[in-house]
Structure formats: C-alpha cells, structure tokens
Image 1 (cartoon, each protein chain N blue to C red):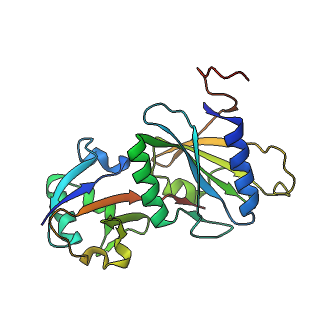
Image 2 (image 1 turned 135 degrees about the vertical axis):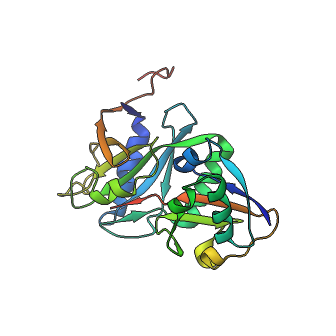
Length: 90
Length: 148
C-alpha cells in the first residue's frame, strides 16, 4: 500500500527537511520499517519496542491509531499518516 | 526576546485563572517564519490535572491541520503552573518537542489565581534538554502601525 506520511518539524532532520514523504506497507508498523530503510533512525523516534512512544501521536486519516490498533492498524492505498509529537509537560 | 500583544497576554492569564487549580495550556500562532505571536488558541488540557498538561489528541490534530492551512506555526506554547513558580519542570524539559517555539509559563500559585490584574509571563527556549530564559515584552509587535 502506498501512503503519504506527514513528518513533524522535530523529525525533519531525518527526511532532509521534507514535510511529507511516501511510505509503503500493509500496516502502520510496516510503514515505519519502510521509512526507516530510507530515513534511518526515524522509526526509533516513534516506536519503542513493539509500541508507539507515549508522547508521539500518530493518526491515519485523522484517526488516532491508539483507537484503531496501534502499529497493527491496517492501511489502504492513498491513506495519510500524520505524526505529531504530543504537546505536554508538568 | 518574545513580544506578546497585551490582549493576548491578558487572555492567557485569564485562561490560567479559569482552569486553576488544573494547569491551563494553549498556543499563540503566527505566520510561518515570522516569529510573531498573533493568534491565541486556548487548548483543552486532556490530563485535567494540577501537575500535568497534555493537549487533547484530536484537538492537537485539528490545530496542526489548521496551522498548515493558514501557513502558521505555534510561535508560543504556553501552560500554567498552579502550585509552583513559572519555570519549566523536569517533565516540561523532557517532553518539549517544538525547538522553534517560545515556551511560555504563567504561575497561579500563592493566591495569584485570585483577582484579575496582570501576572508575569516568563518565556523559555527548550532545545535538546537545554533551557534558556528570554525577556518577555508585553506590547504591540515591532513594526506594528497601531499606536500604543
């Protein structure tokens, strides 16, 4: 599945400054593996072990993937994946 | 230095007082690359906590879609401390993920949530765990043709 991944400012060091990059995979986890093959290091900033990092939000077609299966969320051609760092503190 | 419009400063302080004793949070957006904080967007603190804030996930997505559509950036990211001073906590520093933003803090501790006068806003850059305080000027933006 070919998808578009929107990259937040803080991760654009991995994409040469690009705000959006193409990705492919049948699940969100596969897309991050695919991205990491071309933008080494980006996956580790989003995924910790087998899960999304607590303070990174990922959306597929505007749905927070925490409610759609996390890294197992399945994707279709043309889907849009948005990565946004949480805005949080104490 | 950060310049904040007096009306926006007052709105941030009012928001902090309204949500006390929970922390209040939000952004002030401005045109991308301008470093001018001109559009106040109060956000929900999904944590609804006196010691933690986190933008609501769905609202966060709408905010960033809106910023992109308007070609804006989150120039200021603000929140309140309701029992401590207006200095970034260890959590604030660990979780800061917008290196271009001015992180603004206002404290409503020690009775400051009462009354309706001004409270000091303090502003910081937080980059790679390093905190640098900067001056805050409450006034019209430089280059504005509005009179003070």
